[in-house]
Length: 346
Image (cartoon, rainbow, N blue to C red):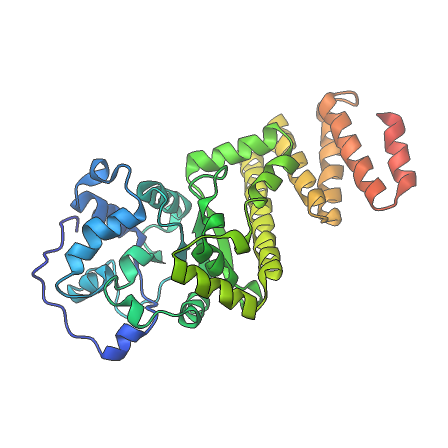
């Protein structure tokens, strides 16, 4: 399984129409680790971007046959590429990001499905020699919608490169929740832990806004021709302002999801009365409030305050903070009487 593929292998001919279609097949995510080991191990890939992997390994390996890496696997009936199996997930990532970090992020995120998940990973899935013959925005968008699940790999939340790349933002545009498409943001374990810790330790409003501030489709970059086509497509369809809004909505939902999963993790491992669980509960409520989801915020603030009063006491700083949060929420909704009752107790 881990051996490098021979360049002398014979691949069955494919209909010409295949080369003009957006490929929907992918490869088993677990095979990417085998690929790394087969071509020198992690040490050989250190510092490489996805573009480096394509130029230094994938294109030379598939040059003679003018096919994709996935087609090579299909030709030898490798179990990583089950014939007729559509990819489960479309992977969106910036080609200039570190390849190993991208792979590690995916392996961490899909750890419980590693033996079954099939990913559309452009380095491997696309025929890097003939893609210009079939590529266009419409077929790409349709392909992403057909797959139905998109994960964007964020190698650094403090420097979210995909937010500055036109292709990545276009792929988010194609992941339309209204048509049943799902979107997830993927980070490595350490990066995710750092993001959660930063939210819990400081002002989550500043943290979230610093991430979202990087999103501006009109300023996104790509190759000159790709950039012009993508920007033209955006202007002809929803416009930059609306697409920015769509992307921001997706990202806000992702931030909530990260905080919610962390709260659930702490509640399940530490118990619902542990101080770290209560901190996570309070921060999730603040994020809901920040996004105007007052009903969810109120439920969390009330539950958190009740437990804090019982566990920490009425005058503990965390208890007083929860009282202040709930009072602020009431005030923002015009519920001044309820807000004043709480404020007199602070």
